[in-house]
Amino acid sequence: MAQQPLFVITKSGLIIRSERLKALSDYPKRYIREAHEMVDTYLREGGREHDPVILAMRSEIARAQETVRDLEQLSTEVQRFYDLNFVREAEIVRETLHALGFTRLEEVYILSVLVEHMIARFKAENPTCSEEKFRTFINNPEVAL
Image 1 (cartoon, helix red, strand yellow):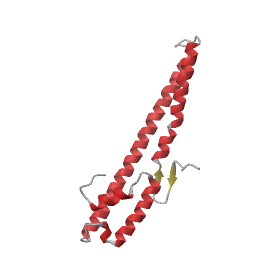
Image 2 (cartoon, rainbow, N blue to C red):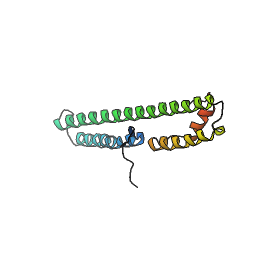
Image 3 (cartoon, rainbow, N blue to C red):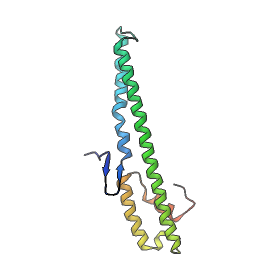
Image 4 (cartoon, helix red, strand yellow):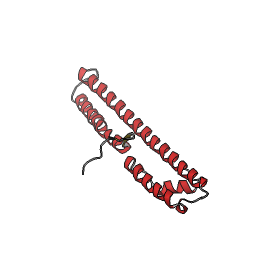
């Protein structure tokens, strides 16, 4: 099965897949683990902590650890952005629903259809998006996402 691309450029913006960002950190994590094993083996076989090869490996391990931290932070921020967008859009639908004099999404067919299309787009951007949570948030203002 082919992986989804990390990002997709659309007419209206950029879709960054946070789950792919998380997957990107797998390689440097494996590198860190294997590099630690190589350093340990080298030291067990008589190498010294201050040998140039050990110092270089430690430097590369530190760079890989920084890369993992950066990718994890970026993934967290992308997910936070999607969550904020999710809430903002749900609030817009809720306010529209109330402006029309209704309290439940199911009472206004056209808004229900709109929400179906919105959810399809949200899921394309963020596979963790929940239609049930979105509808519940619209219908119940006291529910937190």
